[in-house]
Length: 236
Ligand SMILES: Nc1ncnc2c1ncn2[C@@H]1O[C@H](COP(=O)(O)OP(=O)(O)OP(=O)(O)O)[C@@H](O)[C@H]1O
Image (cartoon, rainbow, N blue to C red):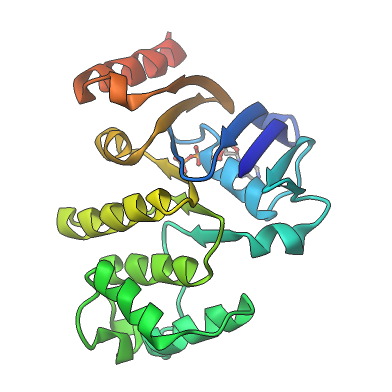
C-alpha cells in the first residue's frame, strides 16, 4: 500500500533520506525508530507530498505521489505530532470541516462509534477544540484520519507527550485499524510502544534504513539492545 523506491531527499549538500526502499502492506504496521534527525519525518513528508524527492519515488497504492499528488492524498490519512485544529470551532465542527476538505460527509453514527472506541470524553466533541488536552487533540486527529477511510495512515510521533491511558486508547484503535486492512506507518522514539503495535520495526540513522526487525521474535529488552547498538555505532 505504501512503497518507497530508492527514495532520497537532499537539502543542499545534506542527505536527509538516502535511497530508502520500504513497503508497508495493507494491514501492516511499520514503526520507524531513530534518533533526532534520522529521516523519519522526512520519509512521512515525502509520502504526503509536502516535500519533493531528490531521487526515487514514494507510491501510495501504486500512485506515485510526485506525479499525482491529489490521487495519492485521497488514499492517505495523516496524524501529526501536534494535531492542528481550529481552536474556536468545536471538535465536531473541526471534524466536519476536515471531512469536507477530503470530500467526505460525516455520518453521525460512524463518528460517534469512532469517538467511543477512542474513549473520547462524553460531550467533549461539542466543546471548542481550544479547550482540549493533548490526548484529546491526538484522538480527534486520528478520528479525522479514520473518518476519511484512508487506505494508509501516516503518523508522526503520534503518542509523544501523551499520558499512558491516552496512549493506550490510541494504540488500541491503531491495532483495530490495521486489523481492518489499513496500512500504518508510524514514526516514534518509543521502543516499547513500537514493539507493542508494530508488525515490523525499521531502525533509521543518518537518513538510512539500517535494519528491519520483526518485533514478535524479540523481547523488549532485546529490541532496546539492538537499537542502542545501532545508535552507539553512530557515536563510534
Ligand atoms: N527543510 C529542511 N531544510 C534543511 N534540512 C532539513 C529540513 N528538514 C529536515 N532537514 C534535515 O534532515 C535530516 C532529517 O530530519 P528529519 O526531521 O526527517 O528527522 P527525524 O528522524 O524525523 O528526527 P526527529 O526525531 O527529531 O523528528 C535532519 O538532519 C534535518 O536537520
